[in-house]
Amino acid sequence: MEWVPTVFIAFKVSVLAIGMFYAVKWHYDKARREQGPARQRALLLTSGVVAVVFVLLVVGLVLLTLSVGERLGLDLSGP
Image (cartoon, rainbow, N blue to C red; front, side, top):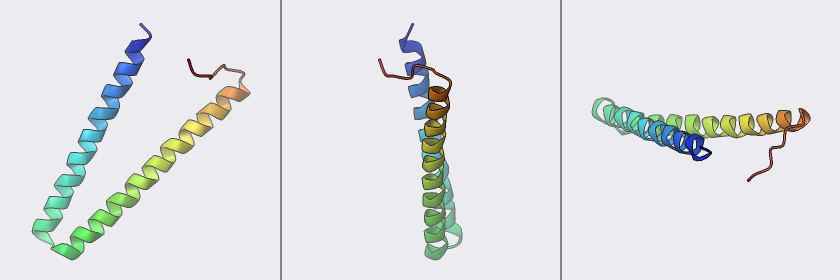
């Protein structure tokens, strides 16, 4: 039973990653067709910034969660 959350989390992460990939690809292809290379570069830069901000927010949330858990006296050591 301990493997169930691991499998579900891995599945969720993979589905979200695939969805994000196709969303960025769709916008990338749409910009290339409609506005040309300048718009395409701007879209790539914006997507990169959004991805970096997202990763930083996730890391910050994990660190905040771990610090709150330690303050509450939870045992958060690995297996």
